[in-house]
Image (cartoon, rainbow, N blue to C red; front, side, top):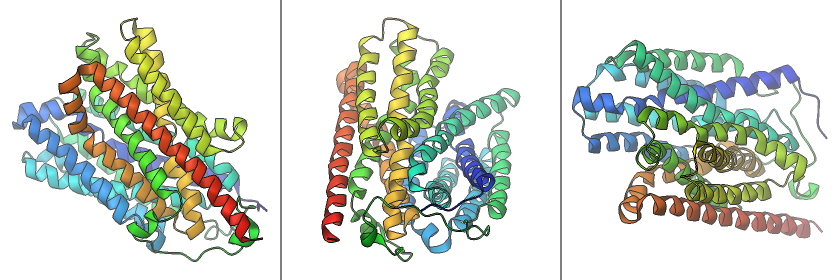
Length: 427
């Protein structure tokens, strides 16, 4: 059964890891804000700007998948501290350079360091919460992703307004903050045992005899992690969700400007309806799963993605009906498309990883494989948009969301089979 854990220390770990991941977006989102400046001031072409995106996203995906086990090997505190300090140092001088090659190298380092944050935040949190609490907890914690995105964009815009045509401060100030947070992690992120608490336990979902002893810590490779039950299904789920999400992140302002005739400023601000929905959806999905679906997380993710597909379809069908309809369906799509992300690569990944005592590796692989979707969104949307226009693009995202829901449905059935087999083996 559960043992008592100091609530104040739970809140401390929750808050610090939330700040860690939200702060990372302060050095991720500014690139989108300053692209026009890089083009105007430094003569970068649109092709150069596209490659800069890849310089960040490619190492993010690869390092997440291949080195996601570092937290299991060296501990989440060390990896988080090193990653945050390295992230801040790598981007501190970004605004002083003008060479696309230098930009690419710095962004490559940025992506590599950020890749190690998600899985190790998940690992740091997992030891402090009961399995029955994790769906709600990770749902609330996942708001850091979308809140960080909004804060990162807003901060970059404000610094750009104060220091026009000077890119130095846009990266220098957030870098100093990120380094400070890295130092903070070193002194605050600890396991319950390090704080003198008794480790949390609870009656497991699987039969007691099948997992009566905690698995020894394992340093799993990518192939070994992929072979774990339910990991492939969750990887493909994360892939589909991130592909659609980044399509909307990168192309929604242009759609609103060109297809709905909103001004560039209004289109940019209005597009945040999707991210605002993501914040609310991430905060609520865990509560809904625990209170109304009795903890059936896979079913909750499936229902959420089905609603997201219908919301995107209705957004396209009612796009000429006015801003209230546009905002409503964008908000709902954001809530149901983005909300499940923290459940898939957080609560569910943590539960799978716990079976092998490899939470960092499992979370890293699922998050990293999902990030491959964000890498290919540019070419994917460009081809669809060229061949079928904006309507075809939105319906393609609807279809992708539906396919992602099918992957979750397969995971739901596989999970029930896995538990049933475990029960049979213990008889």
